[in-house]
Length: 490
Image (cartoon, rainbow, N blue to C red; front, top):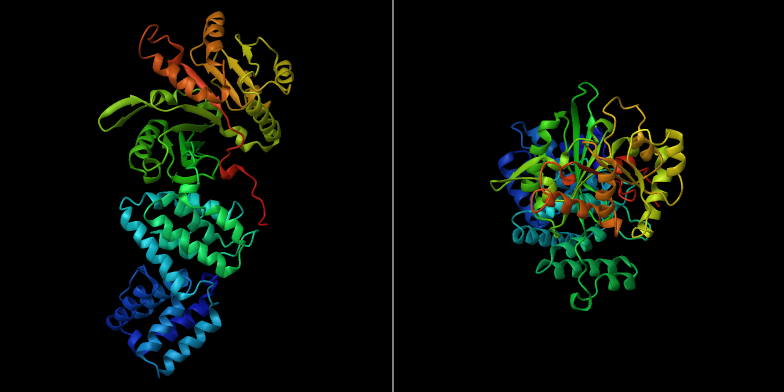
């Protein structure tokens, strides 16, 4: 990529630009940069400095981040100063150091003008909030996460243009723009689709593939919006045991999650509802989701698995409520995600449960110590055992203390339900039987209904199971990327 220039070569570019009289003074330089921005079809952001050398160095940094920008600047200077030897020297240096981009000038400007149009019809920048998911879909899991500051979709397009074609020979930029067209809708979608179709033809890509992908809207059935998952991980801080490093992702369907929050500051548990409230009300990708349905998942270390997160209060537009009566709330095991040795059993049991979710047997344990640990592990290791119900909470002790809950996780059980305050065995057996009947893939929503029942109607009150139920619903097909082994590029 062009951004891989070493310091010496970048300094050569800076010196070559400063040798051009019209580029050595900021006031005159601004005239040519304004012309460059019109040629590119977007703003060229960079931090300006009072010293000419530093200012031009920052300008070169910006030029290197946008494919074709340096070549466009040379063309503009050649128009203004056709006989300048210093401009000719810059042209030769740019040709030596920077490869010609695969998009030509007119196609690139057209794309950036379409992106500008999209941003104008979407003043809330909801599409900018969704770009990490579209970016990851375009580049695949083998590419690293974004390490460049992203101010607009123009930055994303510039970054993707530098990336080589994928296994099918399709440039990631075309995949990104075609998916963006699907997200954008009318009136920008047809123009974006037409741009991709023309680029596919120019690049000699499989026309049939793109014709299927861009069939007319009226000929295609509009797909149902995918389920949304707001995933919040609380990782123990190494220095303060009562504080946690919190990471939040939004995942749409089975797509890779896009990171919403990755704080370096360790937070106490009391601050997590505040963060959750901010995500639900202010994060553009959460607020702008196409499907209103949202499941909230907490990825927790063992000492926090019993914390009543679904009972945490948030305030939206002045209305305060428990998140567990508005959204399905489940927990997931951080320790199991970090323990690769148990992942094969976990994946196998989740796959089995996905195909037998209506008639899956439930292992019910009503008393602590009812099974020996090895006996319980042996029982849960049977292929058909994928659901565990416990009438009692986990031990509140150290991470390495073995209890029935941890045995279930080690055995790969993906669904575990328990009562946090302990329960009369017979009463819990009756209550959980109704909860775990029917299709277990709908269990998070049935738990939502149970929590709502605890606050209304007959039987509501402090003793209702809905106020004391923890549901671990651990989808082995949706593991956040930090815990997935990356595959090499194809």
